[in-house]
Length: 258
Image 1: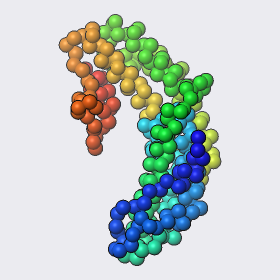
Image 2: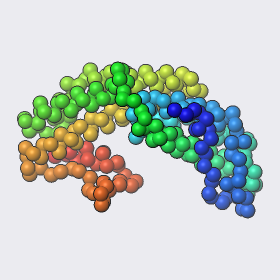
Image 3: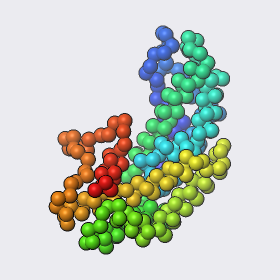
Image 4: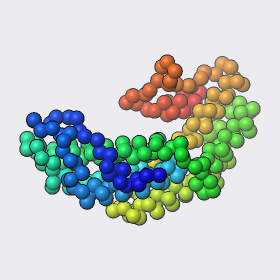
């Protein structure tokens, strides 16, 4: 695996917007500004990325980056405000700081996501304690065969499965919290934020909700009159949900409403 910190710091893409008159913003060497703050943010992103990859949290990666590196992002924004790139004389100090921080931090986040995707195929299968989410997911799946013959409603299945898999859920939560606490101790904010705690709970509930949806679809075999909650297809792919709940959330809400 390549040096993550170096790549994260070096993959900030040039800005295409022209907000500074005749200045060609793509020619500005952004790495020359607020270097210490930028390096600090790259280090934080790298630590969070390592935990996200360990537990296959790509879907929530950006959220964990922003939750764990909030102070580093603020410092970088302030650094760019103190030392703005040239050619922005027509913009106020605050606007300079906000514009470049949003663009550059966004590009760094995209670089981290790209790194995750690049290495995804090369990632080893998890083993031992790193597989706590898989253990929780497997436990929930096992409950489908035990409950479906009783024609239990999806909400009833969820309650029963959550109770049966209480130990695995607790282990998953404890492992995620422990790993994020460890990496957070190396950052400016050494305490785990409420945002990170909330994201961990969302990871766990997302796994459970997907199993509840799968149960609901299997239930159709026993109750043919039951409607499917699958997302509509747009060609060969599921239609995207823009600006509203995710497809997974819509599918879960549909499942438990029946």
